[in-house]
Structure formats: structure tokens, C-alpha cells
Length: 203
Image (tube, rainbow, N blue to C red):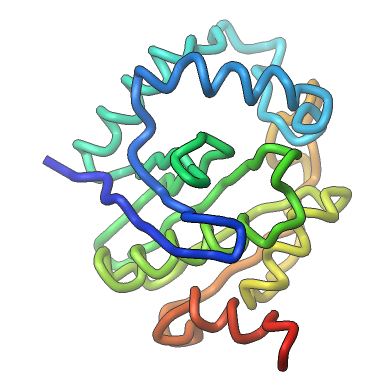
């Protein structure tokens, strides 16, 4: 059975942790998401009208994440700051064999945005993927208009690979995305350490 590991990092803002998203997180998750609905809405995946799929409930989502984790295809982390839920990092599409790749998605509570937590949380996830899972490639896709997310990939040192027109159904329509990637041989031994060093205001 696959295990979603707990990852921790002490930051100037507090203890940043990635832990498995749990069913008992429902209230906190809904509160944060509801409060951030207008801020997150432009970047949220939506169900296209031609589909008969339904948006899953929180409990269904967590159940699917657990099933995907057992299959080795997904790692879904709650992002917490001093144990309070402030976001989510999800590694999906984990493929082994000759590809050994995955994609990463993330969101954060606007109240703690701008503290440098998202790049560090994603770096923690990447370090786990490169070291423990021995993946070769990690990919992040970002809407060109999402300047906050573009800053994240820049801080992480992901390189641009081009555009994917009408790639995902986001905020009610098929949206263009830019692709960014990092290969294991391009990554530093610790992406977390590299992010901290690159953006250390004393340097």
C-alpha cells in the first residue's frame, strides 16, 4: 500500500507541513476554500458542459485520492502552517516505467500568500518525488494569466517548454496553459535548500 508521507519544514512564518488530506479536514477545507472562492475561482478546474460527470464531494475526493495513492498514482497533501490547513499540494499522474514522471498542482489561502510558503511546499513535494520515488520528470502547467503561479515556477527553477492550447477546462471554459518542467538531473540535491538560498534576503 502506498503511503502519503508527512513532510515538515521550519520557516520564519511557522512550521510548514505537508500531510495526507483526511476526511476530517472537511470543515477546515471548506472554510478555507469558501473564503477564497473569488481568489481561487479563475484558476479552478471545472466540469465541461458536454460531460455527465459530477463535481465530487469532499469525502468522495478524499476517497479517490486514497485509492489513487494505493495504486501509486497520486499523492494528495494538505498544506498546513502551525497545524492549520492553508492549502493543498497534489502530485498526480505518477507514471513509472520508462517515463518516471508526474505533474504537480497547488493552491494556498490568500491570507498567507506572499510569505514564500507555496514555493517551499512544492519544493518539499519535488524533493520527495526525485529522492524517494526516483522520478525523472516533474511538470507544472500554468495559465499565462496566473502571475502568482508563474512566480512559483520561477522560484523553483522550472524551465518553460511551450504552450498547450485549450489544455484544461478552467473557470468554465477550455483554457490555454504554459508548460514548465524539471528533470532529476537538472534539480539540485535539495530543491528546498536551493529555494531558500536563492531568495535569502541577506544574500
